[in-house]
Image 1 (cartoon, rainbow, N blue to C red):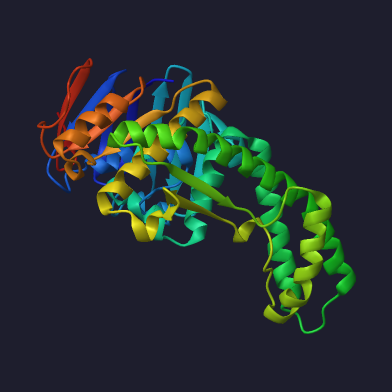
Image 2: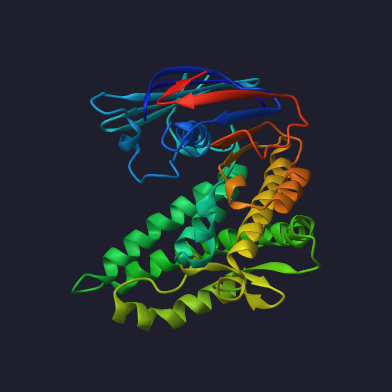
Length: 350
């Protein structure tokens, strides 16, 4: 997929914008706060239907405006999201899409940003969210299964908090969970296996070392119905005491290791940065292979965090895909591809 044009209306610090993107490389140069990252936020919002900078969509609406609109014109369709005070609406080719599961995965972008290091010290839910988002964009079935499981978790937790618990109803809910948990674990296993095959080679190319990087999927159980049913039964007494569900995919985690040592406590900041980039490049390969189309690469000011040698290795490892890069100046960019440079100043792009 190639995004030909990005259109914004009352989004962040932009009143109205039509930005033509180069099919190979677009560079956005400007001071901090000029609005460069807002462009990448808009593109990732089109991809994920969520911002990577705020939890409430309405925060992206320009101050004192009633709504915002983000639209991407691509070579295989037009994708548009309108944000109102009460919610958002999704469109593909001007047709209303009522379920996000029918929208996700159609226009894929992959973001690299300086604070990606949170991956290692964030709560497990943050790592699960990344995994679930990428699998969900590949597999609508997985996304629907996950939504069904989360609905049952809410029902079970609500039941566990009641003074008088209907154990027959609890049994029905738990039995309904079993096939969903099995499907979720299997999909997460496939994802983890694929990422692990790519992670070490990517890191070694980026770092110039022979270091081995692994991503361990800390699953709640083996993916078989009998084992899952047994684990649910064993956790029931604990769940009744805690008044919430203590077993299931919602408690799983991803753990990264460097030569058998935990990355969080062992790796340096520079090593962590390169591990994250290797992970994102592995995600790129995953999306490309599963969807048959490479995602758009978004690099938000990460070059400022790398020395000249690591910059060279990063540019050498970047796959052949449409790319957008932001920075405070043009220095450090390896411009050996066809490209277009824009200057961003206070919401105006030239």
